[in-house]
Length: 356
Image 1 (spheres, one colour):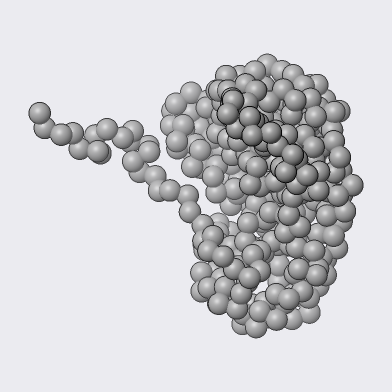
Image 2 (tube, rainbow, N blue to C red; image 1 turned 90 degrees about the vertical axis):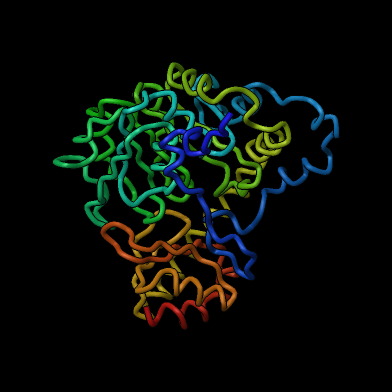
């Protein structure tokens, strides 16, 4: 029997894709991934030495009931309005699979979170990028914009990654009133911006607000994300997601952080906002323009993203290069750390970005 070609065994949409990759080589000052340079919160760290080894021998809870309860108490919503997952990526992927049939469309602003078109293709949807009106003007809702796509799912990230742009209240209201399908609102960076829509999600019916513990909460390695929405939407995502997506240890450390470390998170957010203001001023004083940001990072348009990211890495500073962003061109995204961690990187930025 002739051995079949791998190309004939793999689904067409998967065969055409490439693996997600980023340069994660160690660097003295890593400002590349928008995580929390302060590390994990103290109560989460305290859980690990006390962990019973039997925790690793048995399955975790099917749908992380304890975590749902802690999130519900933290946000002031009901546990039946919450679905959890292995990071917000998992929640987004499960939601896309739950709410759009193969062959449907997923509309999203361009540029945005790089995994969104990836998830569209992996679920046999047509990705429909809609260019931003401009880095400072936000999303195009009218004309040839997001609503015009008549998509099964409309994705919006606010503040947007990688631009830091916030969705205007007017644009969000239009989407919620007129979108044909489900609206996925990614609030991964909302702790740095405020004005979350989680408490409106249940009444909106078509809105699913997706959030993460990887940023302000400092738990990126635990891989815990969640979404808030009407119970009917949440139930559909849980069916799509399946059981056992949050490990027992990840559930325990996240519950501990939610119950005990609110002040630690708030202090970290204030430190980042203060450092962001100082860093933007530092750049401006040297003639280096950055886009207005409501997140824990800034995007700096440059001449050669890959080359300048390499030059910074050679000086011990890692940033994320973005070549050829729609409407922007080349840019580097710089995560904001507390000032005492960010300050040692300033000479490298002055030397490399001043000639951008």
